[in-house]
Length: 363
Image 1 (spheres, rainbow, N blue to C red):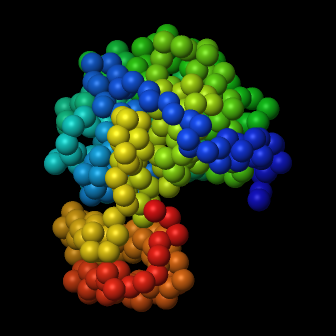
Image 2 (cartoon, one colour):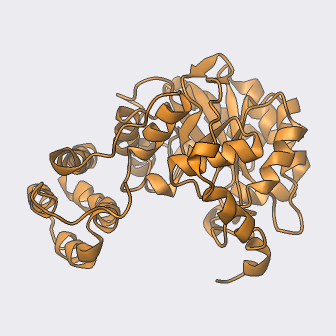
């Protein structure tokens, strides 16, 4: 582990204890989540993941019961929005319910213009990214790099909120570094400028994805802005963990990230539990085959045969690792040489045939 590993892991043991507490002892049922005029039946969101949460994936998680799925991050450079790559990211067609589009940038005016255009394209919610730790984003002084400049944070939020009638939300980290966890201060600024919901990933910018998410910091933020919905994000990979984090921190809900890759039904399971219903079982047998084949087929149609077949490979990797772990290396190797969409689907049906006895490692 590199960088600030020791500081970022300081709370690892405490967090691990939190995440493994028995679910029976944790029975919070948060109320429906309100984001301005929009109400979600359950306080569960699918995180914006660059390169992953495209339109086909968002439609899939929504079909499994996820109340809201945020688009991939889109840079606030409207002049480039006509590119093929960005136009795919801006595609909100066919997505049921409220639609949230995430923008990122460091210029308040460009962010405001981008928000207006996003609403014109069908976005019901504008989400501001101040949580991405990627170097290519930080070089633009955007994403989590903004957490070091609280005045600029306020200017950006103010510009976006004033530019649109749609509710504006904000995604941040706990701070720039373990020595400067300023999420509570950022939260107050965001609330005062009109943000309707705050999502906090439980790591600092310097920690990137190292160590465990330090959800303990989140309680202080919840207490600092009791009138603002605060959503927990990071290292939430089961219904029990979602329940535990809400009970421990007082968060209004959860946002699920990488744990949903290869398990697009997970956010819906958590949403069901937080709505007081029994979570539906993960698909098995023929239902799992149809889920995977349907997802990859949607990618082929959305991007076209050639690009869709390439993009399908990374999603296949997650399905193989989670549900055929003993054969995952073999299956990924076989899949990655296929360029024909139909042959990819054929391999799905062969590898995940109901007669296969190997069990998933993650339901």
